[in-house]
Length: 266
Image (tube, rainbow, N blue to C red; front, side, top):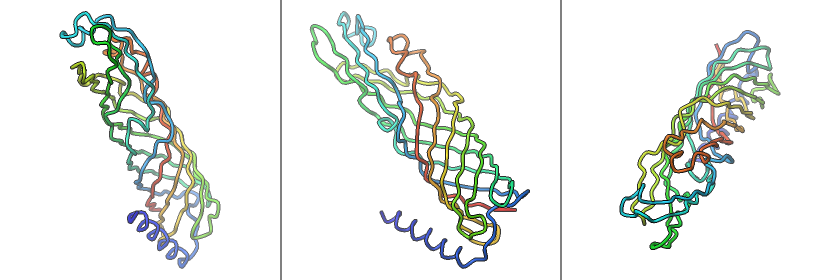
């Protein structure tokens, strides 16, 4: 809460400085600018993995001590919010002014979210166990590198503080994801099980922000947006043998990025 109050006070102070500065356009035809940004990214929707019920004729393939005992493996659907903490991100962009109110930009952004150990379902074991045993998955971190092109429109280009709208589209390289699956009550551990491959996925987003003039050629741009990244390709090299090849056919992420950009015009 203290950090939030400090951030709001900083933005308010920046706005006061901007109001006292002479007005100028936030971009102009033929002008280049470089932006550096950082902030948080909050997942609001997206399925991390699907659900599936499969029969395992003999748990002995996972733990020899359970030889001859059948089970029903019941995996439930889990969301991005279930599996990952809020993400942090850093980025950079190069923009080119089309007029005094619009610009094209290209951006690169790195995003990372910590993976968690969560309950993903249960194993219903047959005789002589006759019990429902919780199944856990400990997922590796979510790491993504986005390359996107976009367009930004300033709504009050001659004012020291200008609202703007932006849209972007591109591709995101999502790193491989693995998980250690455990059934503690059955002594079963599947370490570093491949879950999804490192692959490129479609991504797009829209932003709403304020461009605040701090000095000649220097602007602060706090913004909030909505961003979509498609799921990476599933890796069935281990899950397929358990009949779970469909649970990783997901992985899309819809999030709300909140960040501040320092923009330098030259």
